[in-house]
Image (tube, rainbow, N blue to C red):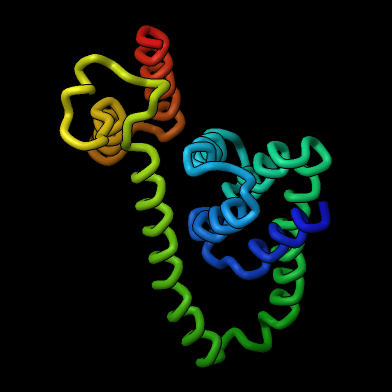
Amino acid sequence: MFGLFLSFFKVGAFAFGGGFAMLPLIFQTVESYGMMTKDEFARLIALSQVTPGPVAVNAATYTGMIYEGIPGAIVATLGVSIPSFAIMIIVMGFMKAFQDSKGLEAAMNGIRPVTVGLIAAAFIYIAQTSLVKEEIFSMDFIKGLPGNLDIFSICCFAATIVMTVKFKLNPIITIIVMGALGGILCGLVV
């Protein structure tokens, strides 16, 4: 149990840029301990997105629950949360003194592109695990596709982009619509 706490404490202490930037480090953590497979991690990300709260906290809670039940969920959540609270308390104490610091500004300018890179890495990982066929979901018209692509997932991905970017549809409504569509279509074929 202490190992679970320590693993997520490291994630909380050393990952910068918010939940999506933390996902690669969380994946390395769960993979190194054999806590879950890539497909389970992809589901974890999906659940972390549709439940209220920060992605990293939701991911830690879910992982802890899978690994050690309710005590594991509590331990993992505390592990990922405590560093952020401690760091923010310390930073807020020094904020006034260093608000005009060129060194701090330079450090922030260096961290921003790294954060974008980590978010891009999380996107690529999620795309690799989410846009391929799974044994659970197989429709006859998908089987003829070249490679391992899942046309249903790709269509959902494209529809989501169109609904949110072009039509400015609320993300919550988009999640509900696409979840219902997936539930109906997957329920019909499974």
